Length: 301
Length: 301
Image 1 (cartoon, rainbow over the protein chains, first blue to last red):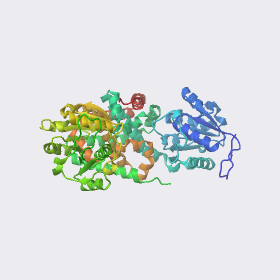
Image 2: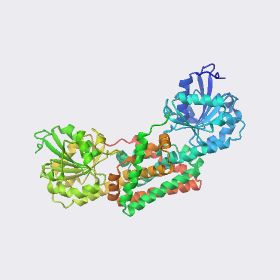
Image 3: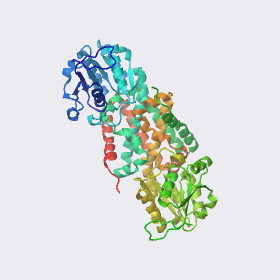
Image 4: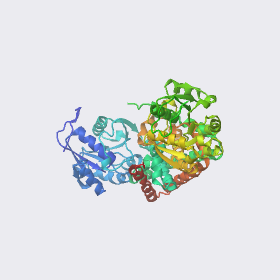
């Protein structure tokens, strides 16, 4: 079994680290690649309920061994990178079976229900709730990439509930991946994510649906995609499996922000109906401020 | 005055061509740059009701001379690149004052009302209605760029109403710019654009508004922008002046497609409310087909 020596600044490889990757998709696959590059002496065991996916992950070298969840007791580190509905089912089992110096972290887009589900687990301190803001519309092991996390935000929730030595290891690794760590309360995290991420996905999925229903000629869609449609609809390519799970898990917050969005659209519609173009224009001028926000503020380091 | 020789395959510069650019923004500025590169011997006269904009265009060399509309009678070619509400006002005046071998083309995002407005004008055949699908969220002369149109679609409407020699010149120039020419009826054009372009802009503007209303911390918006928000909201940076004009001009088609979009969002909302995640997922799987459309179809040459 792999152990790291306390108080060492580097991760000296004294034995092979056994990393279990549960869910061999974009985020987990990318994180495994970075861990392999950073730690060198690592053996990656892949677990995925999608047999084709785990085989592809093995074929392209994301994982070394196709394994199953019964062998978790040999793991040093576990990345839980599956839809949150799955994580809710298996995280307690993982914690039941981890050896005492192992750490499991999830990388899901919602945090409240998962943290809640293990709050009383006797091994709660071997779990770290994380959300690397690095996803995109791609999925599957082929989408995984080295350095995906460089410069990205990594949100940690309830860090004080994780054992200090394990937390310290994880933070060092995330720093080495180039991530900027931020701490958030799980409830606040989910509320903010509904606003800034989950709503965008719904807006994009429904835009894609509306356009495909109204324009049956695919060549027209492609020809006109230059007019901004491609960018706006990019997220409609995202994984339905993962996103239905997020919409379920963050239902309350999403319903709230979706309602606000629909109300804004209706008001916009009413302004066009009433030919109130002055109001329409002044509202767009206000929204233009986003340009300033997105173009000028630099992330805090 | 510039004249080109008929039946010549190249554009021999026998005299300086006088190009009048009305509206010194992204599209007009970019087209002027390409024309300068392609024709060489050209003098570009800029007209803009925004005095600062036309001065900046002069300073950065997009235009050679700041001029005014009273001098249009010396123009060989005129690009009309202003919001459609402005085009509607001045196109008849332009046609009244053009010399007999001059051509004016507009580059606006809607075509029906403008074509309609000059259908009975005695000089209708000196006008060509065009829509280069090359706009982005940027505006102003500084946003103009060489080769912006390379590989992009150029839609021509009612081409048979333009004098054949002038049409031929324009098509040759657009081809030299690398554009792929398509022909559409103005009514069909506006309907399709409402679906594939104008709706995206409304969706994006309202997404930006909703997010800014709900998340007051700009740093949070920026940090989380990685989660797809930035792409989805890109169009909310677009020019309110131009877009309020488009929404007005294409009101009927936009109301129709906006209604379909709001209905789809409401149905999605209802599915989340009723916890009907199976339907939610299958709907997203259907919409995923967009990925295939956007990734695999190549534009016809």
